Image 1 (tube, rainbow, N blue to C red):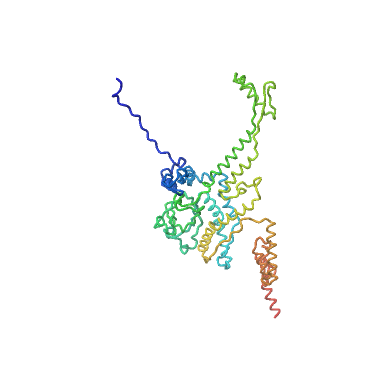
Image 2: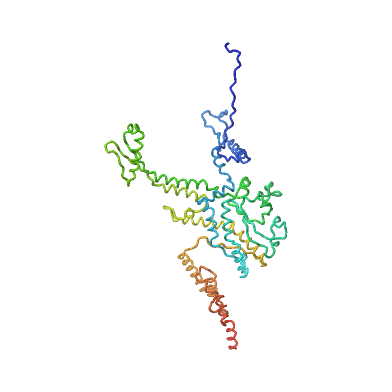
Length: 506
């Protein structure tokens, strides 16, 4: 009756899940070992004490500020950095379609290879002309400059690029064994093939996966391409930047993709530019002061009046209104500094990609300096690409060409030509300085005129490149080889005339 013995219904108890410390973390990596390691690192850092005893200790004053740090690493900060992990090769390819990202990847590759290189001997010995001609012929046949540009450009897109030197061999396990130049037979070198990283899979053996003390720790022994194993010594691999061992598996043992590094900055720059159009077209705000109660009383009539006013408002600045009951005001939004905001975002893209903003945009931005320091830093970046990524690539190509052509395999390397092409005025100043130097050397007796002339002939920028070498005995006129051959065909031979003169003298 009074409900004393009525069984009370218990309210359902809801168990709330713990709030995720990383709400913006990529979904495919939630619950992964990568995230667990980040949480472990964060927890370990948060347990660090800044120093001192607990506040409630016997020797501590109650008024003294606690030295205990409640949270050394903020979860939101860790969340923001952790969300910038590897985005995957397919997304890198998609992002590379964007014009700014595409230029950030391929402009340095083109600039580093544009002026080419000179083939030189490592020990300073003279290189036979036949060897140089064959190397230059195969450089053109196998498009070595195009391969160098693609090697660096797509390497920056994906963070890694794998080049395979194609060699025909009767040994079915040729590519599984470490590279041996003696195994290259005559005519077996066929060219260079480059493979996107999404078609390759790393393969480890022995202690390179579990022994940090080995020299090639976390460096794949083989790369599996189309089901076939290729030993790493047969490949030349480009990696953009250096990864710590903990991150190498995440990046598929490659490097940092440039699209991943700059995509947020590119988004900010492009969105700012797009929003500037809306700001320019809507910077004028017109206010129509009228009888609001009367205006809202008849919505249909009010809408028609408003549309008619809008129609005549843009009639070359003429606006119509009731001079008795209406008032008009116009407010303009100032656009001063808008270009600075836009260019600041593009500067951030430039800094993240190591490419000057003048190279990315193609023009010198208004208000910027001459950019001499930027050009100097950029040239140093290009020289680093040449030295660290392309020199060994070209050296291996030349080794294979010499071995496959049946030539003696010489110790050759390449000297990359300067990346900054001098202007005509700068070139004239350089040649004038060299002329003063040559004159001083001749006057002091260190060299003679014929030796200086030989140097001038070999220098394509001297202005005397086509006059031919000086041979006072066999070529007194300093004619080129083609001109000498033409004279021989006409019956003129300096050697014969010299012999006849010597006989007459006797």
